[in-house]
Length: 446
Ligand code: GLN
Image (cartoon, rainbow, N blue to C red; front, side, top):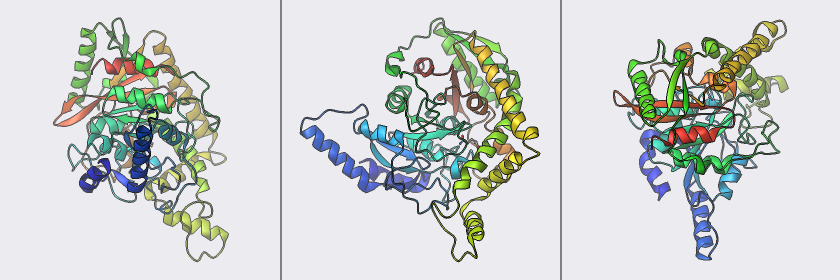
């Protein structure tokens, strides 16, 4: 059924890069057979899901929306994919994204841009734009996205769905094609908060295959969905409601805070003083890590290889010239520059220090508050094409999600209203490994 529905709808939204009709049918049939023979049901039994195309799937093309990997068929499943299969999920296919997760609008996909189901002239956000648009359009029950600087939360906000970026280390990155390894996290995009808790339950937990995986006990997230927020202490950073935030977005966020107040929570204004340095810090660190991570795409090991190279160096050169799109090249150049000897102290090292200051801002606020709340993005979804020629404006869309990524703390975007017909996202930020608290607060709205 779900596969048919995608076939009928996806020509407009274009959320999928690959639809795995055969695989979906086979797994659905296997689940039917198991039920018929009296077998057990997994936690997510029969739910049809889409996987962002930077998460590897055995035998199923995984392109990262790049021409470089247009012919890449991984030989193994990412840990999250294994876990979803173990929970009896039926995977429908692979979701469109910005190339190698670099971007915030899906316009950097080297195949085609995904469109926002609420208004096809607008972007769905990015880089997990396909994942968010598919859930909004009913083309998957849920999807997985990845978030390095906002790529789950910002598209969830633009598409009016629920997106959760877990604490760094809670969900295994094994099998996630690395963009910026110290920031990347996989998380669920769902229609509602309860589903988010279910999917997180299925994918969280220690994995020996990921060296940054955290050895923590995974709590029962479902039991935190009590609707109870009495006495909750909420911090609202003044930097998150300042200039540059659309007045209607601000209004929706303040209305949500009022609702929470009505349920017995209290909120106060606080300051995260290093917020203004976050975007610069992020683009330095993320590009540096990307330059290093993407060195593995050399035309030898993965994906497409240039024809008729003159020698080995030329093979690298030509394959990379042809395989990568403009934004990916821009980041590799930025990162290579920042890491080159003589510049390392001035840029990379300095950015690492600022990252620590940003993390401390959060630590300090969390000494006195349970959660931090603000908008997910300064505006609602913008028009396709309106920012493509202006990378700096595009980078500023992430100003409210990037600090969270640098601090490694968890955050969720949930819909909290509309501004001129487009959904607004509320960002709920929690203490490290306190996803349960975020889910509790978010669930109070349902
Ligand atoms: N938009 C941000 C960027 O371009 C975030 C991307 C992400 O989180 N993967 O880097």
